Image (cartoon, rainbow, N blue to C red; front, side):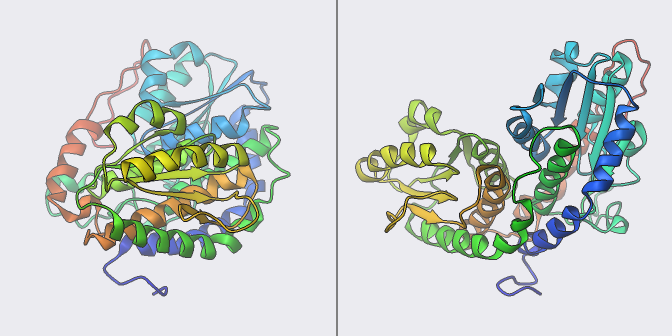
Length: 394
């Protein structure tokens, strides 16, 4: 068991596995290029759309930021794409469909809409035997989890037991980082101009980033007001990282919000009270400077507990709110920041006595998972004119 993680801390175990997952994926970029080639089928595309739900929606947002300088690309929630942006799914489009389980109905719906509209489809999933792997033109598997574990479940309620496709019943962390590196590989294959970045340094900087973020999270939790509001905000690559971090809190039944840093000043600031927690994610000089303007008000005048996880900081002694992470380039920071933020979330949760061994912190878990099965896994697919069947228990 990795140091610092107990046997009753599946979230910690997942986080500890992330560097190994990164190393494995860094050696598989040629495999990703081959999958992109199969998906394209020798046909040029003039647009790339990336779509997913939950964590995968955050990854799709990040892919848009990562690729946009070189590609015509959109990153969207899967249902927004299939039910409100169908015009994007024509013959000149490549849909990159993201689903860790490979069973997400709204993602399968987007895939079916893409096929009906003549678009090509590349699936990114952790489950090689999933419906997404079958329905896409080509698939690249993340390899973050043992395939034999993906169709198992320890839920006793038969309605909850249908909900499978994940290694552990805990807020997912290693699969998000894996999805990000898979998107780096796909972007390189599409000519997105991301090949010159130092992606290979990620496994080496994981440990110091994790230690700094976890220590900061423990300090923040001890200073915050019990039951406080939590806000996580970033810009650029920090914006999807903030979404991801807030989702990890929500999956542990700890209410949190997320968004863009400037929008925090225009909206959430008005609800921030003494003892609340505010986390900023900082990847470059301009973001650091803006946060430095905000903190004196939020921390000094309101009395909130403010921290910023920073992959960029000026030379010299850092202010108390700045948590120094390893200095990496802005694109690489887009992967390191959510990894560090997940450690921060875990540290806050554990300081407050939250169970990080189970989804929903184990609170009435099976009833909520059964409800998710009813709302999501049994939801019918809508694909105009395709005759695509409903997903049933997929």
